[in-house]
Length: 439
Length: 130
Image (cartoon, rainbow over all chains, first blue to last red; front, side):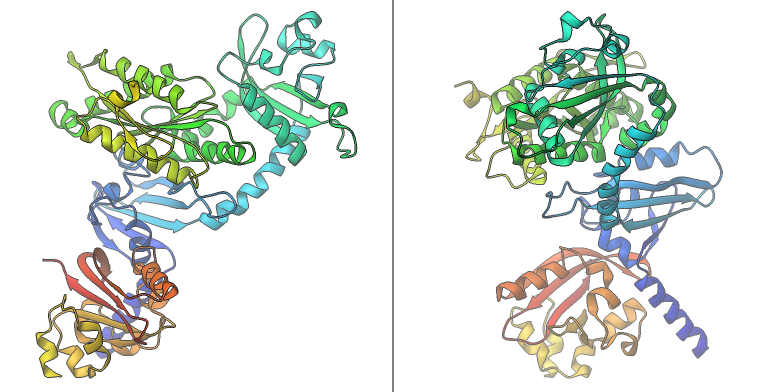
């Protein structure tokens, strides 16, 4: 008996010390067994301070999990493999963005096993590799069609060749001397963003971006654009430095890789960006802000009385409201803005080159749009409202985590003041409601 | 020292009484206790905690608390608080709600975190939530 007892103790200790988190849960997420590393990683996320349910604990950062499990068709198998879950934005150069990896196995019709590990360091190394990979892929993949042109130091197009006409449909006269925003739809690029990309090209040797471009006839195509400095000679006077711009139509590739890309970058329910994509975009935008401060705002949005909507009309109705919220938000912002579902009924929008006033106007427009419409679910008309918090970047704000926290505290104030309203945090960090803002 | 058994979990002077208490006295406490030194090595481990975790003291004493004994506390909610207090040279006496994974079951507990720059020993006290 003594051997059995000491073996049991050794097994316990083995699990206590396992350097990965292991959880066994029921299909509804309720936790049956859990080891210490799981608690280390999950406790800081838990909203109610308990670890009774795996889905609840991960809801703020991985709201899709409950759905992934309930929609999983097979009797057993891998529900998700190394799903990346972003915990914090981090501060570039100071604090790493924290990231968990989550694998969930369905064992049978009553049990799940989850493996959780902290991949913060691995992700950091991977990011450093990603940039050079993007470069190689741009150089090595068979370029079927591309437009190549040279830009002057301010980013205006200065030379003409037939490749521009082939890809974009523009004539020489329409192109020479124009800004490269010509190739983007309105709202998809700002003059700040063009300046950013030229600066990034100077600093890194290139600037790569994937996004929608527009032809002369107004039709859109998914493009990879690369800007590279034509001369890296630092002695050259600034007005003689120019850039090369290559636009590649990669519409075919986008379709091929689209579903995989969408699954990892987008929220499963609403189709807009997920938490991880939002923080990636935010981090890049903050880096740009640090190099060259300019207006930058964040809007935090929360559906009012969402629990009541779920309780009254059922979860499918709740899901429909979240989808409607995402679509309405998408229709309110510009293409350059990033809108995302951060978790549960929490959404956010990142607004580059937008000051507090502009962000407040947009938020109010969105609030009114939501209030004045109905969502149809199963023959019922549901109305809902949103509370919104707005904050803008300034030198007092340390990073995206804090900027979001400011917007969140304004959102909380909007909730407290009665919901269905927009509050903001002024630069001196005083909370201000709609009445004061009008003054 | 026998009256230590009457010291409740939240007693204000607990830290100073614990440091000089005998192992027998610590075993008579109604809550779990882990005492560790400035290097994070476990030096005291009482019977309540040993029973709850299913580990005998020999497996735990002399081990690093936050990496080898209770990795579940190695985050900003617990371990970081001790580090911050030591770094600032200030006292720490916080009670927080937490979940421990005793024998791999999630168990709601209240933790009392105790340290003082004048004391070599630091403590995590564990009370099962009611």
